[in-house]
Length: 127
Image (cartoon, rainbow, N blue to C red; front, side, top):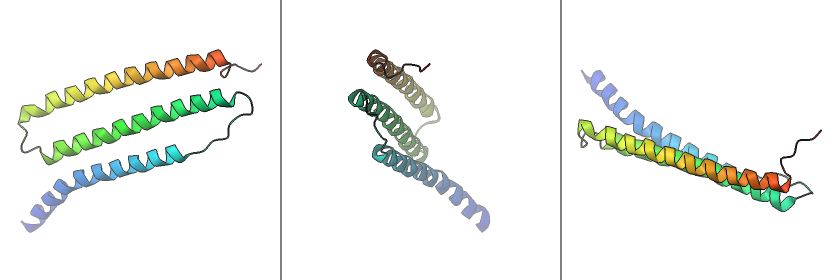
């Protein structure tokens, strides 16, 4: 009986530890992305820098959103006993709705940046 009890405690602790591990990994990934340096072209440096900055903001925002989701899951795991059985579905549905809104907003913002870069001639195909 002692083995089954310790196995149950291990499984109960495993998911929160895994979520914290994922959260810290995403935080390190974000820090690396922010510090990542890339050479700038000699022509149209300002436009290229603006486009790279916009892409960096998009990806760091996506990583922040994933980190927020891990915290959301962690809260659900920790307080699952206090939530009723029907409490998970509305919270998850709200989270999915917010994710769809964030993707729509980010895609629109990124499309505006790409349109400006086309206007500046950064995305021309070479022949």
